[in-house]
Amino acid sequence: MINRRKFINKAALGSVAIAGASLYACKETPATASVTTTSSAAPKKIKKPAIISTWNHGLVANEEAWKTLGTGGASLDAVESGVRITEADPKISTVGYGGWPDRDGFVTLDACIMDHNSRAGSVAFLQDIMHPISVARKVMEETPHVMLVGEGAKQFALEKGFKAQNLLTDDAKKAYEEWLKKSEYKPVINIENHDTISMIAMDEEGHLSAACTTSGAAWKMHGRVGDSPIIGCGLFLDGDVGAAAATGLGEAIIRTAGSAMVVELMRQGKTPAEACKEIVERIYEKHRNQPEFDYIQVGFIAMNKYGEYGAYSLRKGFNYATYDKDEGNKLTDAEFKMA
Ligand code: SD4
Image (cartoon, rainbow, N blue to C red; front, side, top):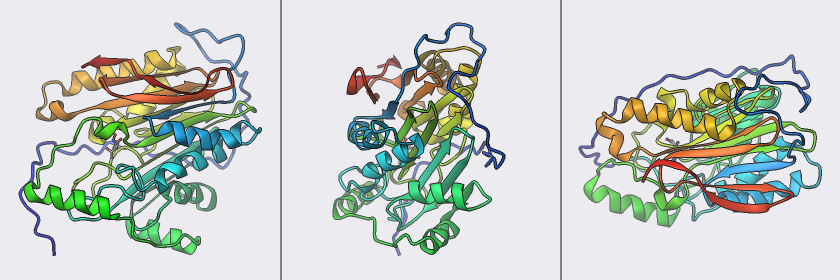
C-alpha cells in the first residue's frame, strides 16, 4: 500500500451542488425565442454554428467537433466527439487517459454533458474508462438519472459496452513518483496551459450543447470530486438563455455555483463576457482573504443563444479556442482580473 504522507488540507472542501434535472417533457427552443435584455441586445444575425472551448487543447477538439457541426450535424454529437479527442490524448495530463492520478496513485475521472432541452448526464470518480463523456451521455439518454459515481458508474459503463483499461500512463506514473518525494498538495495554476476541457457548441438548428471532462486536480484526496461533473458548477446550459462552463480550482467554482450563475446573469441581459467577469469577481471577493487564494485560478467560457461568446479568468494565463465560419479556429487569451 502506498504510504500517504502529511499533506496540506487547508481548504474545507465545500459541497454545494445544484442537482440537474433530466427533463423528459422536452420542448423545442427556437433560436429566435426572446430573452429579456439589458446591457446586451439581441444581434441581428445569429452566429451559428459556433464553438467555444477551454485552453489551447480546445483547438484540436474544435477541429473534431467542426467535422460534425460544419456539415449540419447536431451540437450534442459535436461536443461529445470534440472532447473525446482530449480524453484519449496521453500527453494531456489533466483529462482522461494520461491524466495525473490522485495522491494514492489512482486516475479518477469526472465529466458531464447537457443539451438544449435541459437534459443532463454526469459521471464522477470514474476509474478505468477512457471516455467518461460518452458514459455521461449514456447516463443522460439511457437512465432516469443525472449522475452516477464511482463503482456504480463503472459498472454501468461496462454494461453499456465500454472497456476497462489502465489509464495511468508511464509519464503520469513518473510524475506521481516525483510528487511522492515531497507529497505536498498545492494545485499548480494554469498547469502547462491545458487543464479541464469544457466545450459549448451551437448547431445550424440553433441548438446548444455543452460538455466538460477532466481528471480533476492532480494529487487530490482519493474520492475527491471537483466542479466539473456537477451540473450548475462545472457546466450549465439553459436552451432559453445560453451555456457556461468552467475550468480551474473546482472547490472555488462549487462554492459559488459558478456556471449556473453565469447563465443566470446572461438571462438578466449580460453579455457572455460580462457574465463570466461578474462571477470571477465574486469568486475573487469570496476567496481573496482565504489561505488557498494563492493557488486559485478559475476561468469561465460562455455562449448565449445567439451564438455570442465570451470568457474571463481570475488570473492571467487562461485561453480559449473558438470556431465559426467567419473566423475559423482560433485561440484567444482571456481577459483576467490579475496577473
Ligand atoms: C477540478 N475544475 O477538478 C477541475 C480542474 C480544472 O483547470 O479545471 N483545472 O477542480
